[in-house]
Image 1 (tube, rainbow, N blue to C red):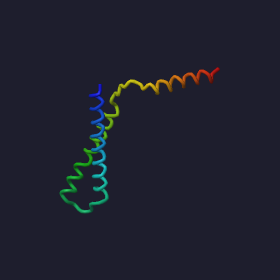
Image 2: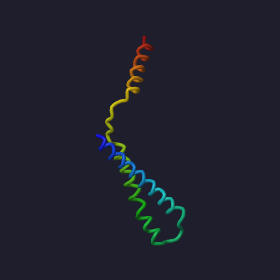
Image 3: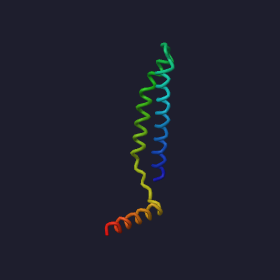
Image 4: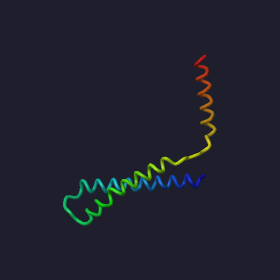
Amino acid sequence: MKRKQLKATSVMALGLLLLFSGTISYMLLAFAHRDFSLPLLAMFLFTIPTLMLGWYLLDKGARADFKRKPMAISTRIATVSRELEELSRR
């Protein structure tokens, strides 16, 4: 179970890293460079797939099923909340 959580978390972290890197690259491509060069062409070719891959990995990691046991305090809060709703209905 923890292994799946670790995998999903690492996929999300990699996705965030790629998305951040692609966004910075895209901003530099759009605002910093004004003339044609090979690094500019490489940045152009690198940016779009990086943004797409980063978004895909974030989406994949966010859809991971984190099956954790509820914490005792959250269970108690839910119980008190239900009891208050029942009292307010009376």
